[in-house]
Image (cartoon, rainbow, N blue to C red; front, side):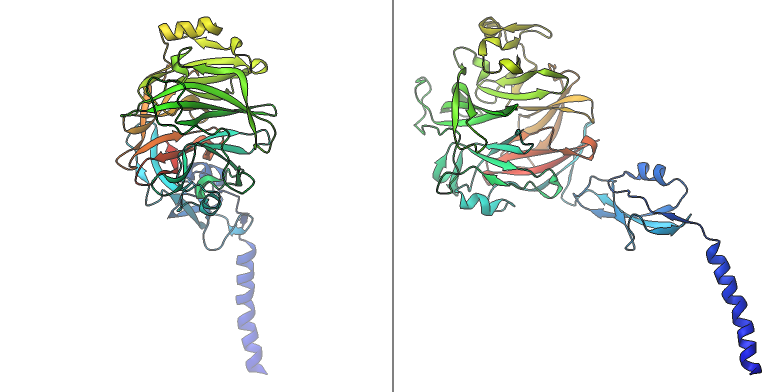
Length: 440
């Protein structure tokens, strides 16, 4: 009995000491730091605890953003105040390409959007779309995105059945793991259905009754109405040149997008306005009264002009105003006449496959286009430009046969610091890819 009593006397003070130490510790709850930069996170936690960083190559978040806590910890767990806590921090993917300019930090291919290697391969192959290009995004009335694709073929090497265009619909806005389609618009046998099929005739430089194909150049929603712009191409030239008969607007009859009808009067022929071969419509968050347009002739060798129209007069071409100088808009035929005789470029040559958006992150407008052999972003303080600050984004040395580089204000994240572009490649595979562009 005496021996056991002595053990109790020895152990009890030790337990009391440990218990006393434990209750003297101060605990704090781990906050949710997902997508915080390290600087933001340190400001958030103050002196509550210290970070022990572990860097993880990923495209889930941009470089330097916090992914998670380590050691199986999560937001809401308790840790001792002042202790070290492991955090997993995003590092650019191993495939990322550094960009050496003042605007862009790095770019990285996320995945194919179209084609046999894409996340949409089963949907597209079943609908007869094996090779395609473009993917011009715009927002539908229900908040989803419609993407407009160009010449599409059912087999390899631009062979098999040829459709001039098709429409995909997506509700996917988490693009760090790819762009997933909800559906494509199909006919009654499940094959892609163009909004307007081209004649697929042999090209002719001078005969304006000839049509090779109909290629989308943009789309816009106004209220519940959905409009698509397309160019009627009569001749494919060389060196980035092609000839356009006209640019036409079609309107969806309903929200199935099965049928479209031409909007009478919303056609710009080559003779009426040479610079309206490829028209890209867009919303201006700084002017809710108008729809804006940037436009270029057929091909990739000229500059970009701009025009606008009141939203409630969209279908009346006589109400369109054309920018003829840095601050002067001229309405109707007179405006077109002035542009034809003395074009005012918001973006000087050369511009192709234009797309434009306002960047909240930069506080500037971004114009994306192929210029030379590279996709570039040009920035301006005002929607009307001039777009003179030009930055290389994606190089043809990294993406063979590139063009497109289409942008949209819905396809951004990380508070606008990351922009997703859809990039077309003529070769080695006629399809499109999603590329993240991370700004500085």
